[in-house]
Image (cartoon, rainbow, N blue to C red; front, top):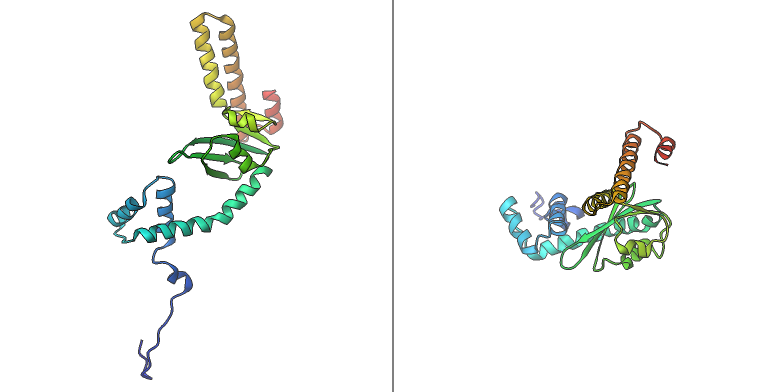
Length: 214
């Protein structure tokens, strides 16, 4: 800009503005597409152009994704560090991209995700430490029982399926003991779940919940 004095003056953009030509919402969407939907970088570049008329290079895509990852690292590390102190954790794992496993650890306050090469107990040691003192809710995958020697809460949906299979097997082999066992366990399961939902809805307190399910 040329002033009346005849000299040229140049302004400077704020640091945050000069850092990138792309806003946080676009960058967040890019991170979601790549990390959750497994969209390749070239497909991401193409999609941004077609859907939003945003021209961006492959190098910029990668740089922005790396910056996003680094910006989340401190928070992610804090959540991981706090996990072993949680009194109850529900954990599960599933197949991920390119021979990886996605682990999830759910507490009352937050969820923590861990991508690992292994589906074994070594991941649990890496995330929760050599031992965990709380209650671990799991689906009976062997890695959990190998790692955790404390109290385990088995997934009720899996138990429900087991009771159903025992009942079907009992009918097939004409075993009254198996049938009675399966029917009894299903009744107890329903009683417990009914009490649990009443507790969650505030209809009963924890003491009544314990007495009902004892």
